[in-house]
Amino acid sequence: MFSLITLAPFQIQVDWLLRIIIAAVCGGAIGYERAIQRKSAGVRTHIVVAIASALFMIVSKYGFADILNMHNIALDPSRIAAQIVTGISFIGAGTILVRREQISGLTTAAGVWATAAIGMAVGAGMYVIGILSTAFLFIVQMLFHDDTLINKIILHVRFNIQIEAVNKHHILAQITHELEENKVENVSVKILDVSDERIVFNVDGIIDNKQDENDIIMALRKYPDITRISYTRGGK
Image (cartoon, rainbow, N blue to C red; front, side, top):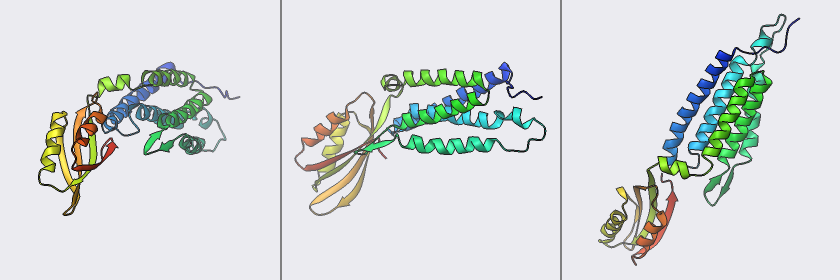
């Protein structure tokens, strides 16, 4: 008679947890770069996705060993894991909202995905890794719930605007000078459209993360030759 409850040794489950922690660090590094670019999926989302992906992989690789070791059993139980991964993605996608070019719900979607992975781990008899992953995810979600800690880590972010102005020879020098006065570094200007009456160009630069972009935009608005400013959060 075969036992349906086969627990992996504690040392192996600790190794699995180490893999998840390493995956989280790697995901956080990728999210850090995205956060600098002011993208919607930042540190939190990448950490959660990395943890979930590692847990899915561990469950798919080790979670069905007790069944496969039985006699007269010929099946591929990892196919179930694949179907759960695909199915839960649709649920997660439903939590993502787009309003006025701002995306919300990414971390929630990743959290739903991670929760599915935890449920798979516990269902496969991987209790320790499932419980520890739950605690780890909970701490991550609480720690990065707002941007206070992230803003302390990220020192600089990208600043990008499009400016439409009257085509005068001094306009570019005025704008560059104003940006430098507002501590915008590594300023890059690219002309997008030009005619005898008007000029449209893209301005890209780096600012301190604590600096208010609105102050820079309002400083540029004082020039009468500037007719329109379009601000893109996060740059290119």
